[in-house]
Image 1 (cartoon, helix red, strand yellow):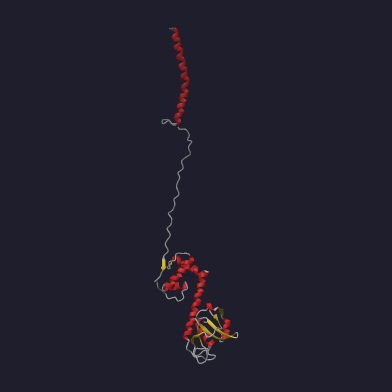
Image 2 (image 1 turned 120 degrees about the horizontal axis):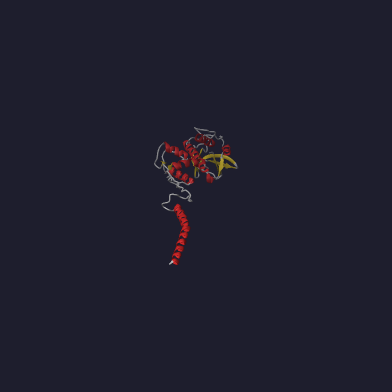
Length: 265
């Protein structure tokens, strides 16, 4: 009986000693657990996460819608605005009417500029016309139209003064000889003064091949290397001239194969 009591007492003492050793460790573990994630712990440990940064996405503005080109003039338009356009695009005989010939010229310019070939003048084409005028293409067309206009004026004036009698030395307007007729007509038509002698006139013009001759150019007749007659080319095999005594100035055939052509303008 006494032996049993001693054994129980020894076990009790051992159990108490173990409890005294284990209790602080358990308490420390519980305290640490509560500081990290325990819902009832009042003491929070230092955070290891970086502060959250709010990311604001850039705002992309809506794409600007291109404004359609505004039509300013088109086929059928009339008036002073059309006249100014015709002059800018070098129409041969401006008439204040936006007609087929104006459409053709505007399309040529649009093709040159590689824009839509509508044949109408919108804000884009209006700007392009100015650029075309400063270009080699525009200057070439302007020169061609000017030449055509001046040649046409010469032909018109030659018709007007046809029917006047021939007179040696005649310088017009009542009578003419050959060089008197050409010099008078050309001065009235384009303001260019030519000497009153066929050979001298030949030396003041630009000689051109017959294939390039146009109505309004001059035709010079030669014999033995000397120029002896001159007239105004009318196209084909005809000319306006004052030929010989007893005839009147007017339209007649080119009566010789020994001729060359010259351009005054």
